[in-house]
Structure formats: structure tokens, C-alpha cells
Image (cartoon, rainbow, N blue to C red; front, side, top):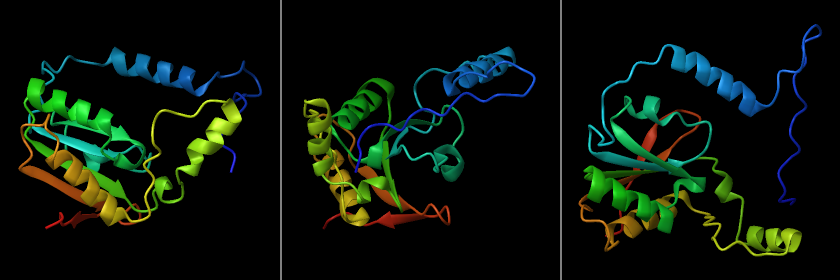
Length: 185
């Protein structure tokens, strides 16, 4: 399997106008429209609902909509697979110790790309670029088992003072429903 990123799409062209630019250009333009109507909500970085949500970066998951959250309700921490890595623990530690969160919600999802990868992905990258990534892929074959492992990593971290309310779920990308995963006994 190739590990390099696909080539960018050519710029969009209107028959009577100049190229529209890159995806990033369109995002910057969208931000200008957003900022023109933006009003400072007057809130600080402390989440109102005192919860941090760790989830996969999958573009199909609109976390705020799926969980009924509003701007300012939570900290949202996303990575490939929604797995609890050292950097997730770093973010949760800051979230809890500096910004007052007390609950942690972990969300994996069906049809996750990490179900199809292995640590061989790192070896392929090393062969392609001549340097092995310092990070682990954190691929998994069993969603429920990986959610349990992520819950255990949060619950046993010495850096997190609030580990009583840590719950894990699998989000079904076809139905939008969460299925709760029981922790290890």
C-alpha cells in the first residue's frame, strides 16, 4: 500500500474566471465571511460542562451535533482512531488540572481506518522516506477492546486527578448511535 499522500486536486476553474485556488484558500475565505458576523461569546477556555471528549478525527463524525454539545461545553481532542496516546494524556492533564474538566468521554467508531492498518505502516514509511516515525500507529482489530484499553490508559494515568467518570463508546457511522463499552472488571 502506498504511504504517500495523494496528489492535490487541480484548482477549480469557472469558464469565465481565474482559478479559485486551494482548499486552504477557500477555508480562509470562509473564515472572512464568518469573522464578518462574529461576536465574541465572552467565554473563557474552561468547558461549561467540565468534560473532555476524545474521539477519532474521522470527517464523518460531527461530535458536537452527535452529543448535543454547544460551543464552550467541552474540550474536544481528536486523533487517528481516538486512541489514548501520550499526547492525549498531555491534553487531558492540561484540561483537568488547568481548565477544570472532571469527566472523560472516549469515542471510537465503526469502519475506522485503523482497523485496516498495522504497525507495518511505519515500516513502509521508513522504507519510503529513510526514517522510521517515532510514533506508533496504534492500529487495532477489535473496537471494543481498544476502547477498553483507552479507558484503562486514562484511569491509570498518574497525571490525571479525575478518573472516576471515564466512559467509552463506539459511534456507528451508519446510524449515528453510540454504543457504550463496559470497562474491564
